[in-house]
Image (cartoon, rainbow, N blue to C red; front, top):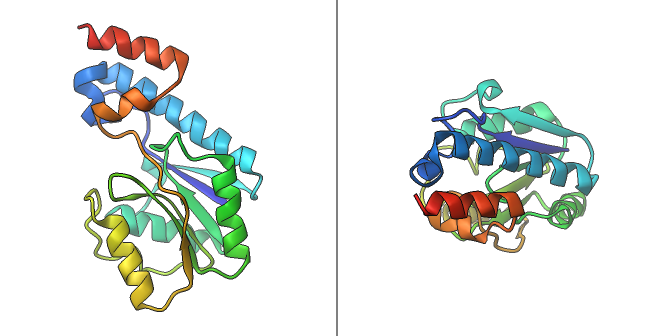
Length: 187
């Protein structure tokens, strides 16, 4: 099962760090496009059911609690991805699923900014999620430290980049997005 975590593409509330460059509506359109891309990638992986968990349906105090609760509800090995990483491919998701089936307790895809773009778990556990400094550059390192300290058998996938800051936009290769970015940068 693949669970796609997504913030609703609402103007002024989505991709807020990109609003100065794209405007509120442009940032919301980018978020909508990233959601469609993440869901399509999850479906193309053919690793089982795909669920979209939009922000208004997620329950918990912070991102960690929301992810933990989603994994508990999944009741099976599950993979959570966000929408911020268009570099994740169906092959990455299939590899994560294979590793979980092979007996690994967790799989992570580290992100260049110090977080992670994917977490997969055989069984839900609060260990990687509780009391984490979400949104900082130490999330992946702290998660890896916790998994190692607990003696978990886990694997890291390739490191990927995500779209959080204006400088990340230059990596997007989507034709319509690229032209919109060029127009926005001329403002």
